[in-house]
Amino acid sequence: MGLLICIFAFNVSFSGMNDSSKVNPYRLGLVLGTAVGVFTAAHLQQYSSWWKGELTKFHFRDDFNQVLSADKFGHAYFSFLISDLLGRSLQWAGVKKSSAFIWSGVGSLLFQTYVEVEDGFRPSLGFSISDEVSNIIGAFLPYVRERYNFLKIVNFKISMFPSEKFKSGAHRFIVDDYESLYFWLSFDVSKILNMKFLKFWLFDFFDLAVGYSVKSINWNGGGEREIFLSIDYDLTKIPVNVWILKQIFNVLNYYHLPAPAFRFTPSLKFYLIKF
Image (cartoon, rainbow, N blue to C red; front, top):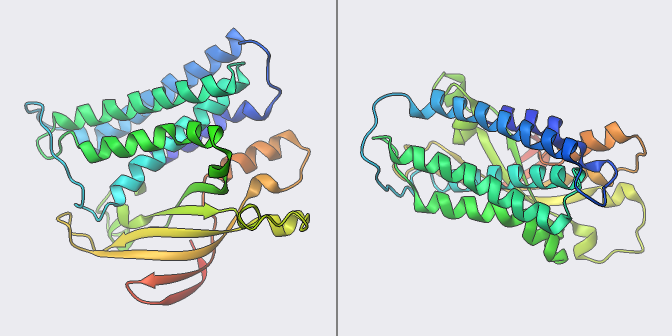
């Protein structure tokens, strides 16, 4: 699904273009058509990874700590990513910012809820309440960040690096392997410390990020949690006037790029470059 989301990002990241005072039906049609196409592709990927086989009676099955909550971060992140991209694209189509992020939150949540409902008919899965709570948080995070400016000091990012399990063929797609995923909260240091006197974009470009990942999980609550502190980069602060470069930087800013990092658990370790 991660690859599909990246494709989605490149197809709908036109929001950096000029805003319109009213809805442009052609742009809106392009945005909605692209969204439907990507959601369809995402459905096919979910079916290939999780939904093949027999169905059962709809049931609930909460898996709050099955993989040390890494899946909750995943649900929140991908809901956030879909909502933020769709919201920015709706603005490009002429929808007012507040309405755009409400509708994008609704759209993201509807899709993620559909996934949960499908899980509810699979014998080995089930509709997870904790997953749905994570979906809600992620889907409406862009709207809350737009409404409450102080929340813009924090950004939600992901990074991926193949784990030993993934390399051994345990998963077809890297986004299905929680041991290969890293979730980051990136903090805008210059805004937090109110360093207005430091107007050099090169300083403002660097942030600090707290990361979370898991290793050696047994899908029954066992495994190790990893917590990191790393340098991060805010690519949107690079002063460029070339539109295509701005769009590339906007898309890349959803991803935590390789950087020096300290790991604090399960043991202290320094990485010159952490992917």
